[in-house]
Image (cartoon, rainbow, N blue to C red; front, side):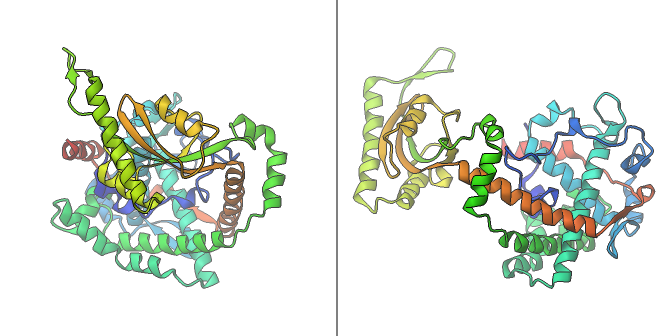
Length: 422
């Protein structure tokens, strides 16, 4: 699956969609969101987002209506220019999260989103879906920002620094990716209907809202008694999700040493190694383990060796760490057998042979997960409560008739990204 250019995430990196209902709900949360194909709402194009069958406008028309107010909330106004940011961020976020599965959902980035229906009734298009998300996200971001303003919570210094540097970050991205100006970079991502002023307004809303979100989350204090009570009440539901009081979760660091040499098959698809080549690989792995033992022999020093010597691209930059492993993790069996060994203790090391080579192993963590999972659920529920309270406090009014959405050539950008990666 082609990926959108990394610079597309200059904005998306500032959007850990907290507005979509607090922290991401754990798999066991009853509040988990539905997929686009399961959306609910009006089935006839006359209400809400369905007022127009297609909101697409020509670049010059969308730019001309940049300052048009399309929604209000607590005395704040959403202009069409700022809406472009929320809309295309929703599109980009979905594509980057779903990857190749966008085609499974029926989304074709080579076609206008306003002409692609979702589902068989044809009432809702992908443009309706993302526009609905954009309006909802503005409601949530702005409501939280208003709560932050009302509570007079000082901006976290790091957040303030990031906010102050936001346009400079865009300028750096523009230069890195060959754009003449930061505005060119912005409009390549978000269409011609927005400008620097809209971008900075979006950033202000986001950081003010996120500051309130972080402050409120810092006040959440889940007790052991609450965790125990929730587990008892929802035990059957949790067990259906594979979580019992005996379920273990492991963190494993490894350094993969691939064998050298080998003989390729006639079709070039497989390589076989001699006993001598495998032995040389084992010795190289043993030397690394011995080097670690002779040094500080800590998780950190193991991670440093992994970054230097591992041939596993999936973990070396993370110090060789794979976290959240359990008996259902889809890893090669010898690797799994090592960390699932009942005698295994945190800090244990060893060598494991697989088809990929020899793994220098280090057990970084092993713990029962039910308390952490239940705590995540309870934290999510409390976070959702204060977000919902903000939404109820500040009522949203939208004039859908005034909305125009510009076009962005997603297929071109995704193709360019593929070209850069090749």
